[in-house]
Length: 81
Length: 361
Image (cartoon, rainbow over all chains, first blue to last red; front, side, top):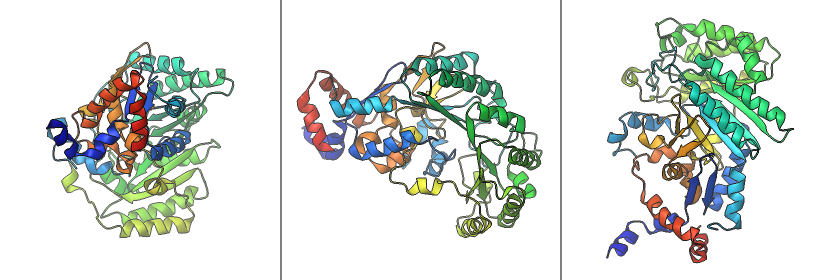
């Protein structure tokens, strides 16, 4: 019963999540598994970029739109989109 | 082993890089009308945090190929001493590596304390790229970007920019220009002044965008313009004057762009040693993923770290570009709770799981 309900919530999400693994050790090294192919290329390019972001902050990637909502604090962001 | 060869290769790859976004203070000498930060009055980065960062870099130096440090704040140059201390240490490791390790540094600063003398020292230590914001010529700029004592800031910043231009140093300064409802004429005047004083200096670029509401207390009264007309006219003017544009607009549309907060090897370190991911969502508990210790070890909540990097598993563009957009998921999402099961399975060497996973991507 529960399993049926869970799968009906978001089958695709569960399928994707089965592949996730990320752990960080005390030196900041990461272990990952199940990285999406589409992300590897992007990560590779960004990792080689001289400037991690190049944008500074507030960045134009959309972050500015959430500031007002984040300002409400972690207890009051349930309405964020 | 939990991972297959491809995943091992990715892990090795990711661990060649370390990106630190360091907030040496969250205090600021400015009180910009649109600022979203709290203007904390902290004493700046604690000595034990400086020590921890230096020890972390030292411990990792043998395995790293590149370290990048972004200085952010508050106003980072309020703790110029900490910047030179950490960058000096990093440069020592780079010099000792025989070319194997490289390092670079950037700073998002208001420019008020960036004298030519300091710039020369910072460039020598590897901090070569800067972002400095202007909101128009002096009159308009000083309306919005004021000192904490309400005094204007334009003249000092301009003096520092011109002094930087007069040096032969190898740096880049992106002048960020915020367009609002009232300052198009002033911005036009400023662009001509930039052109007159340093227009052919390719070390200077301009980035023109609308003023935004950033979550600060004055948001309701800001002279925001919803129209892009002014921005487009000013960008046209800047182009006609020959200014270089940074590749920010390319970033926005770039299908390979990844926000620093989504990268597993990127850490934001606050003055008290807290480790986070996003420089914007400073008030969010989800954005405190751990702490750095004086010996250079990091205590990281891997589940939280995984949440910020979740898009590298799903490939979801929206969360690669800005993982904060899903901050409504402040509770560990289903995705990660299930991941812990997957982790156990992987550690058992459950190849059936791995095989099933590879089909899902």
